[in-house]
Length: 262
Ligand code: HEC
Image (tube, rainbow, N blue to C red):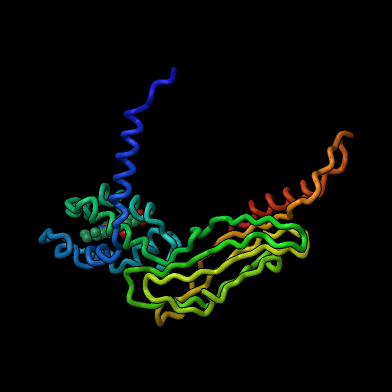
């Protein structure tokens, strides 16, 4: 008989509770901690992050490795890099007095750049019959929270192979200006009029405040043709591959080849 894993269940419920208790990571508090670390943390004499790092944008471009100050840095990446720096940078040693929550709030601020849901670089899979329509999928974009500037979404487009097989209902985002923490949404439908491989990128282009420099969030669209008849069984050995196989192979190869660097 299987033993009842009561201690594990208990541990998991404690973990779930801890995870819940931590959802309050606050980039606004993190901004105050970043800019005036001593005052905001209640530890007189601590140097501020800005005294060595200038701006949070400089840290984001350093962490992303792309030089992009609006880079899409996840909270987890920000936590990993910041806690590693606290542990290893002699100059940052005095900052080890920060509480766990203060560290998390600072990481939330470092990660506070525009984010899509599903997150950028996700692949969205669609299936529809030729000349049919897939179910629509929603993609939303949320502006940063701890900013004073608005975010202008200058374009939303499917770009690349088979882009014409996707229909974007994009008026909710394209040309829209989001206030801090504001969100917009679009829907994507796959409506293939050709059976060509359809693997374009979904590109949101935007700029913040008065800046003329645009930046992007990119997701990967992947449309496949739903077969209406079961594939013929290939009993002859070495016979022709069904078209479905070819399409699937083409899609897989394209997916491998497509990782696009903005
Ligand atoms: C006294 C100077 C000093 C202060 C104050 C300081 N840092 Fe650092 N920090 C450094 C140095 C030096 C490095 C290593 C070189 C680099 O990444 O620029 C570093 C590295 C980092 C990294 C690692 C970047 C990466 O590429 O992984 C992060 C994140 C970071 N600091 C965040 C912070 C934050 C947040 C604060 C404020 C709570 C802070 N630092 C305060 C000196 C400082």
